[in-house]
Length: 112
Image (tube, rainbow, N blue to C red):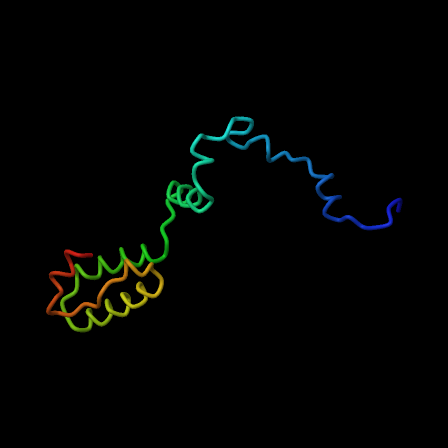
């Protein structure tokens, strides 16, 4: 050994051929103008939205909406309310929903 220390990561970087960089889209092109106007979280949101990603609470919201359309009995309502409680635990507070009953079922169907 010609060195006094072992630089494992440095050696891996030096040995890498970077062949994956050849196929990256946009390589060598300037960044878009809006890139510097947004923060990291806003960029993540845009990329996630473009990729078709839905947060878990939105997926659950769609499932609840479908369940509401077929609900007719107290058993259905209990199942829906269980899902609504789960939804409310994971979604942002302003978007939380109230529980459902047979009395307000028709109004809730329109809301969801």
